[in-house]
Image (cartoon, rainbow, N blue to C red; front, side, top):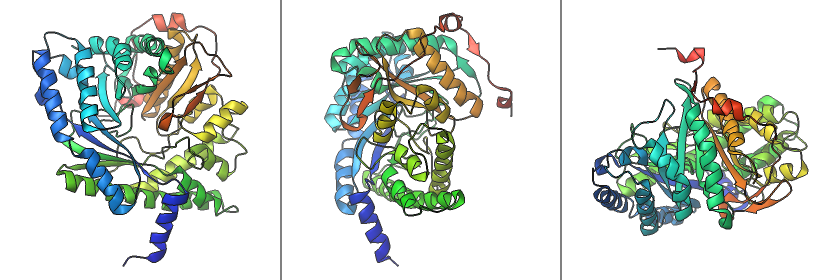
Length: 452
């Protein structure tokens, strides 16, 4: 039986507490688009994507009206383009980048992801060409997102790829300096990248996925914060239980939307990613949840512990709400996209070092962090290596999305707009890691990776 109180509670969550479905993402395999002729391959890619996703946005809008649930983004993810490019005699990935942008324009989606390469154990055909093309590709497109997986718990970390990505991130910022350095805001460097992630900029369609699938990413930091605020004298155990029950309700909404989109599009339903994804909007902040639990401000001592509590409770509550949970799942901590994180950074309470510690227990990693424009590629690479090691050793997904603010320094900020928000430039350590980065090779996988 439908409970009136549950209906009213959901309406309040949507109207007053920023509850939304962050994204429905259609994953599309491009493996059958491979061709030795790159122009024919691009034509196949365009035809397949625009056929499969032609109704994606319209269906998303229908579901919004049907249930009154905001769906913020409609997105597409595709097979890592490095794999498709490898089949071509002319390896010019930029042609694929421009084709994907045409697809995004035609389908009306917010982002299209999959300009990606998986190089955690080394480079294969097409990988280097794609990675080296990323700065130009992101400068010439507006909706394209790129990602590179440089490590895993089973294989270790490819330090040659890490070194290269430091250079790619810096060059991408330089090529888009007249557009608020937007290039690296659409580029993620992963360790243990998931195949079914619906969230940009790291989404790609893994080779183990169906030909076409619908994945859903939920949100709701404001809902969790509101629930916690109603229990000011509760114990930690009770707070965890409150978060679990709230996450259950949020995830059930994601399950409903994913199942309906699957039915209307005639495409299999994949997973619900039950990550708490913040926005710059007031009341939609992960940092504010941590502060509601008991911190004066996010970034002070105790932040890592409260984030671990939140992340665990969100996963436990969400898993009970859906039989198909995947992607990243947990709590995101992107600085520029979270009003509380921005305030804590500006106040000096939240540092890059504290954020790194928090990534050991959160959903992803160092996300949407603006750094001084004079940062060296070696320092970027070292930050990537540090974060990748946290993921490798802890057998979890970690990622880095750094934006060098060309021409800016600590105290300045970059305005991205929309969901990407605004990023204060964070202080970095100026001592050089150049000799370490220049050694190359591979950091071996940890002992616990040998578990067959």
